[in-house]
Length: 181
Image (cartoon, rainbow, N blue to C red):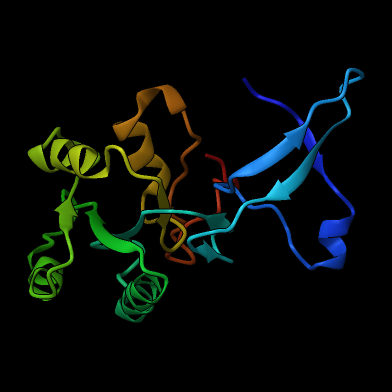
């Protein structure tokens, strides 16, 4: 079941904020004033996106529009390893520009790399879904790389809003602004 809860005030004193993915103990109230009583020990947590207890960090990068930022990919990969989380790189928009150069760079690292296109149904989408199955995953990447489109293709029932790349700025417009489990 889903319960709406408020965090106890003592969490503020401890400077502890409940995150998506936290395992918690809750207290149910007859009047509906449910509360989070305890946040269990986390195996890991990220500030951005604000999540806890994840198994895989899915780093989404496009081949173009927005142009791949290798520094961000490398930083996110390093943070994942530091937090003992398996990084997974997903390259989108292969239908707009060939992804071989990006694949070539990251395949050498031993990090799982998948190439997907929003236009055609390819085997990598099936392989990606299989690789993520049974794991708690966080999707991250620059605005406009296709995270929402990818999630909609993996899980059509999500119906996440998607947007176009700003031609003036050459990047996304921050269409999706949520973190949920």
